[in-house]
Amino acid sequence: MTTRKIIGLASVAIVTGLIVYGYIMYRNIFSGNTKFTQREVYVTIPTGSDYEAVKKIMAQYVDDMERFDGVAEKKSYPQRDDKSGRFLITRGMNSNDIVNALRVNVPVDLTFNNQERLEDLAGRVSHQIEADSLSLLTAFKDPEFLKENGFTEDDVLSMFIPNSYEFFWNTSATKFRDRMAKEFRKFWDEDRTAKAKAQNLTPIQATVLASIVHKETVKKDERPRVAGVYLNRYAKGMKLEADPTVIFAVKKNSGDWNQVIKRVLNKDLATDSPYNTYMYATLPPGPIAMPDITAIDAVLNPEKHNYIYFCASVTNFGYHEFAVTPAQHEANRQKYVAWINSQGIKR
Image (cartoon, rainbow, N blue to C red; front, side):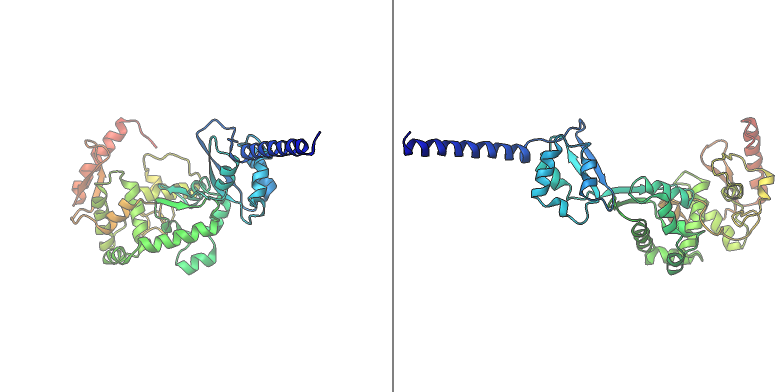
C-alpha cells in the first residue's frame, strides 16, 4: 500500500472519528434528556445541597444522567456555591438547557389571608417556601425582633398584610419575617397612619379593630358601617361587646381551635379573657384574625352615623340591622333569637 493511500485512509478515519465524536457530543448536549410527561415541572433544591444531592433529585426528571453529568461538568455547575432554589424544567429540554435552568431561581407568588392565628400563618407560608412552620413561628416570636419593631407576641399578627408577594422558594424564616416588617411599614404610610390617628388609634390598634370588623361581616360593602358602630362605641368609652371576640376567647381558653361556634351563649359572655370585649372595655391585646385590606380600610374610612348597635338580619341574610337606641336593638335582637331558635341552632 502506497504512502498516499495510507495517508488517505488515515484522513478518512480521522474525519469519520471526528464526525462520530461530534455526533455524540451533539447528542449529549443538545438532544432531549427529560423523562416526565408533564409540560413542565418545578424542581426544588434544598439549601445546602451539594452536587451529589442535586443529582439524586434530578434523576427523577432526567432520562440519561450520564449525559447530564457530562454537560454539568463541562459547564462547571458542580463547583457552583449555592445550588438551592426552585427551578423550571420543561419537557424535551436537552442537558445544556437543564443545566442552564438550574442556574435560574424562579420566584414563588406567595399568598396568605384569613389566618386566624400566628400558627395558622406559619403553616400556610411553610407550604409555599422552604422554611418550615416551626422556624417561621420562632422567627415571628423572636423577642429582640418584637422589641425592635414595636410588637408583642399577641399583636405581631398585625404585621402581616394579606396580599400576594414574590419570594424565592429558598427564603429563610428570618428573611421572610423581615420582608413582612418592611411591607407593614410600607402599607402604613403617612396617609393611613394619619387616618388611624384621627380615630385615636395606632396602626396596630386599627388592625385589631379591623379583625373584629372582618369577623363580624363578610359583606365588604357593609364593613364601613360596622366599623362606624365600633368606633362610635370606642369614642364613648363603651365596651365593644363583639361576639367574635367572645368566640376567640372561648377557643383560646379551651385550646380547641377547631370547635364550631355559631351561637354565643350567656355562659360564653362570662369567659374571663382580655379578648372578651363583653367583659373588658378595651381593645383586645391582638387581632382575633388576620383582617383583609378592605376591613382595615373600613376602620380608616368608616361610615359616619349614630348607630351604636347592630344585629344579624333575618330578612337580608349576611347583612345586619342597625339601631341607635337600646329599644330598637332589642326589637331586632328578638327577631334574630326567634329565627335562630327556629333553625335549631344551639351552639
